[in-house]
Length: 230
Image (cartoon, rainbow, N blue to C red; front, side):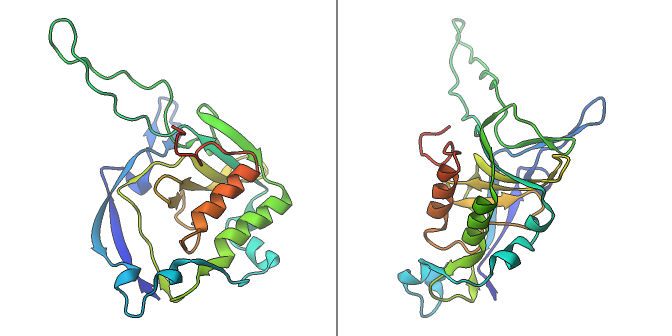
């Protein structure tokens, strides 16, 4: 298997999350805008024998329902939740006051990104949330595990755009509603990341994010799938 793209994170804290200890030593983390710096980048187009149609998604039937649900974190989750939340606020334009000095931009009312405190999901900025049924879980796992490239199947692209600003997540919970892991999806830039880095959307074939969009809409979590969602 060829690793097509190698990148590292810049201007962000460990694992791309924000960590802080409050006076009572609570751990809080949330996704924020992340900048990516590329070191080595190869495209599928540069590979000998490449054809554009190879990027299309092909249903592989590689994993059965039983096999898919035995994979991490499906195998240890008691509940699985689909959520949407506000994105990172855009930098407001600087304005000039009556004395001719620039005004500081106003602080946003709501923090953008998924927020987890003491291993529990905080709903302060959550727009929509739905617990997935067994049928919906099977459908989601089918999308991420059973769709791959129609050609050059032995090649895997791991690439991220310049900014990662997710507004949708699949959250895996234990029986006490503690967060086991979460898969965060940015439909604007077609990228995903997870808290543990142990799960992703699978092979990034051409129609993969369209299928994931349709999935979030079908379960009643459409916010974040549309271009005008902020």
